[in-house]
Structures are given as structure tokens and as C-alpha cells.
Length: 195
Image (cartoon, rainbow, N blue to C red; front, side, top):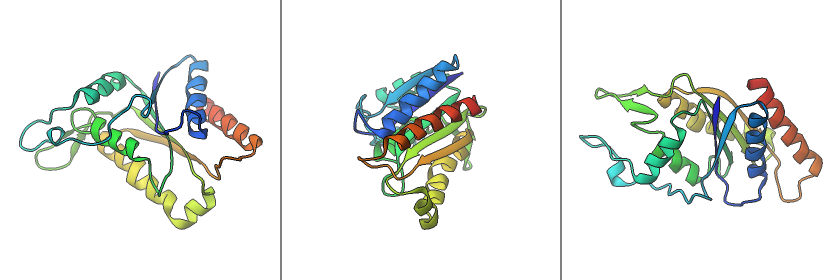
């Protein structure tokens, strides 16, 4: 299996990056491929351009979008790794999904409305981190909102099967090293369970 691990965090050393690197290493330890895509490191532009929007004819994906689609074309699992900021993913990840996973890659548009999913049989997994504890995210409605507006919306349009969305809450700069290790162990256990 090939895993595309899509990381969206601006700091080269962050808890979120640790999650992504742990996931990629755990996948490789199981004899599978993992391609870690650091959106900030590659300087991905999240802004959808006018020529990328179909209006009466086919859209023209920009060169960077074509490169990402080529990189992802044979991925079996898409693992999105990001912090939950202001109740959702960072803008760079939202833009990545809007530009890369849309018509021509994630689905075909149907003239009468709706989509014909192109990623059926593939999987979606999300690993996130938040400053808020998980209990607060659930009680405030933020957890359900991010799952519906991001995970399930992507899956619904593209045909991806949502495997799981695991959030590590209470993340801050002076986090107890034992909690960090617990998260690392949790990611490794998740990979072992799923793959």
C-alpha cells in the first residue's frame, strides 16, 4: 500500500509534524510506502485561481496542482495531518483540497448536478492536534463540525472511505513528555490496527 501523508503545519519542529513522521515511519515499518508531503516546505499556494474553476468547459489545473495529482495518483491512503485552528484545518490544507482533490482528480462533475467520485476504494485518515482538550471540542460542537465539513465532505465528493479521525487534544508548548510519548505510541498502534 502507498500512503500519502499530507502535513499542514508551518513549524518544521512541531507536535503535528511528529505525528506525521511517526505515522510515516510506522507505515514503512509494516513494509508499506509513505510519501510525506509538507505543504509549507513545498510552498504550496492554497489560492484557487480563476482558470482552475470550470465554467462551461474543462478547468485547467495549474502546474503545481498537476504535480501534486501525479504524486498522489497511486496513493491507497490519504492521511491528513494538521492542527485544528479556529474550528477547522489550516487554510493551506483547505486550499490544497480545493485545488488538488476537485474535478479531474477527486471526481468528475455531472452536468445535471453532483459528482461521479474517482477515488472509490481508497481511504482517508486524519490525525489532528488541538490546544483544546477533546472533551471541550465535543461539548462545543467543534468536533462534529470539523468531521462533517471536512472529512465527510471530502469523502462524499471523492468516494474515499473515512477510516478514522484521531485528535490529540491539550497540545501546548510545555506539554508533558509522557503525553507526547503516549501520542506517538497511539499513532503506531493505530497504524498496526488499520494496516
